[in-house]
Image 1 (cartoon, rainbow, N blue to C red):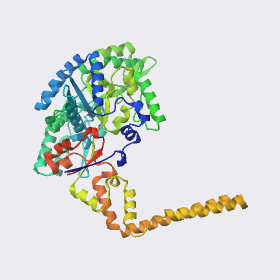
Image 2: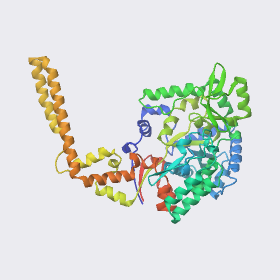
Image 3: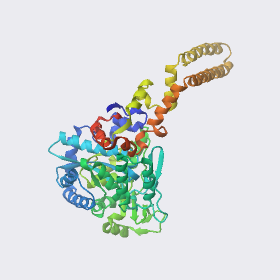
Image 4: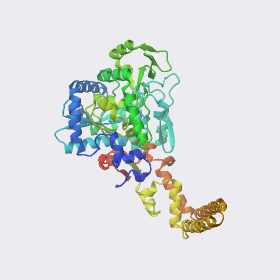
Length: 539
């Protein structure tokens, strides 16, 4: 096994906001608190400890311990996880958290990388600060309602799609979705992967998770625990009335004062002024109303509150009474979920992908407004998995690691120019042509200025002609070097499905079939969350 690393900027796959954050550029620093270095966690621990304790930390820890005991009652709990569940009761224990949707059979590979980042960060913090305890938490996004995003996974270039019976509603919180219809996916998946030892393990996980659990939340908890329970991962479903009760004051503030809209909008505008794209736009009220089969946003108009597209409404007093009695019927959206997480957990750090960090960077002012400690933000590990054979192909083709991440046409054009026995770069000729026309411009200025436009038109025409000739010559060389071109294209296709990052497409089962029980230990042993590098692992 060999590991190489690149800067995220060199992969050409991450936004300017993310790469500027990693470079700690001055114009981004207003959008976050402490940067993720091992040394900065000392200050973060003190900040969170004080803030969490004054906001009922002991009661929250007791409630979390009780709820997790319920949620783990029907699945095997490893010694490491059992220890972490007990440690959460102590005021010297803190969490590092990652969250993810309930994608079918984990969805894309980066599900694994998120959790590995959390586990390894907790390990590193314990070494540095042995007087404290650190628990890796996977926050299940059970309240999300975008079924289309989570209902499939890719394997061997095929899409395995979950199609529930039409009688099953898919508009409500996905965690409550019944697992009916997944028998068909299991049959197709089983036929695809064969009968090897590793295939049998994958089939067992799928069967026990989805065919022996009644809803998607329980199925996902089982699977994540099977994959990472031995490392002490704690899996939390925060859609629970006893946890949401701690969030009532801030949900009330949201309903009455629309605090998130005012603060997030200011940060969003500030991000745009710095030239960055805004990931999520704030609404006036960033809460949903929940009931069976329904998760829809709450709207306020003229002092009355409505559920969007439904005949459900309340006056202010009725809504606040409902909030006190049934906080579980209120669900934070993507902008208020981070605040909910940080209110109930003794959390130091949130670990997410580039898109997630982008919307967290809109939230710092909101956290300050409601006096909740803003967490350290850490970009999860990103990985390209390749075989030794694929790496040898790359080296034989003289493709550097940064070049491997170029767009297909850029890479091929660069390599054709490099391996061609003739020069296909007409830049000198173009410079010479421009120099010649500079003299003609001077001549026209001295004689007849009306000829300036004619000279310019002729210059543009001739430069276009050189461009055309250069492209034709390059195309001819591509045909002549067809073997090299096809090998370059084939390698990129293998490593970058649909022209994108492997981790955003492939399912972990594709690699588990080949590497089995060595896959996850390999990731745990090689990914360093605070290195802030994109890793290429040759297996």
